[in-house]
Length: 425
Ligand SMILES: Nc1ncnc2c1ncn2[C@@H]1O[C@H](COP(=O)(O)OP(=O)(O)O)[C@@H](O)[C@H]1O
Ligand SMILES: [Mg+2]
Image: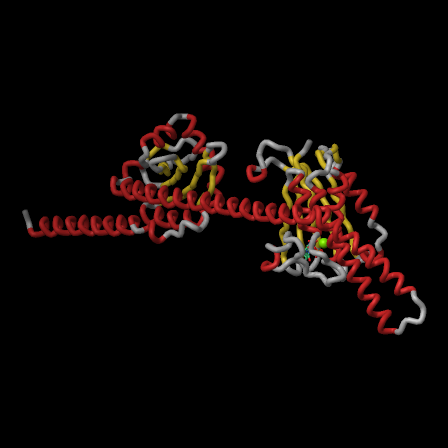
């Protein structure tokens, strides 16, 4: 052996040693990836971090992420890099599924090198299954220009580790999403129970009390009117009487509103055609010159199924929404009213058909700190003369009695959208 030879050997060994160090570094980086990724972010953000790591681990030409759809259980393309690879990756995946390679890799739970079936030019494909102990989350397809024989065990080990980390992070992120959704729907249910309870207690209270108040009130109003007609009253007395009369009217409005709570639950139900009802309400209030500067735009879906409901109560709801929208646009604006058959939705009962009614105005909107209170009885931001704060709370009770739901979304200075869903007959 010459000195030259041993120098060469040392150089080879050194190179190997460097490669091992590099490998360990990469392993370490991948193992710490879990701490670096924010599981509250969306899948795309998470994926971008892993995509970078895959690039560091192997010379890739393209990469595609497929995730299992929770409903259809099919593999759906979520991301392709470069994005032009999307269609090619999709057909590659379909070929792999057809020839059975795909399920073999899922069962094996480890990355595998497969010959490309769809892509030309002798590309090598590495498939990384994203699986956890409980389920299959997806599949990553990595396209490399490297020949199959040049891909090392180290390459595959790094990719396996990456796939494992990626699976864990994505599983956590999906769990986080589901937990968040459950929490939100629980909060919604809680709010509804609270609201229903508030309405019920008011209903109980007012059934008897409203008559007791209205009778003496009518007598008072009568005498106020009589006094007001008297001749020779000084200016101050006239003013006082006017105030008394105004306030008596206000009491009467409130008590009447309260009385309607007790009425909403017992109302009889008939077949109601929502479109016809809306047209009628708008016709009735067409000539209110107070609101001349507001344009009503109607988009009512023909062949809307009928619902079981009480036409009078529903008219009252429409009227409340109409006047609230108009009050929100003192300097004019637009009011869009639309109806449509709503798609089944798990959050409102997937096996029922629904009619959806929407009132969307371009008014001043509702501030965030107020929106939680608008269904509360007596909550109003209007002047004593204009608002009782009962319109929406009565509407809430009516829609609830119809087995439906009412929802308000709003943005200050942009407008408010009220959505009502009612179950079809
Ligand atoms: N379309 C709307 N745009 C802006 N604010 C609204 C709208 N609808 C309701 N609100 C707010 O909700 C409050 C409660 O409405 P409601 O129960 O009908 O009582 P009222 O109209 O008598 O005030 C209103 O005072 C208003 O602040
Ligand atoms: Mg109102």
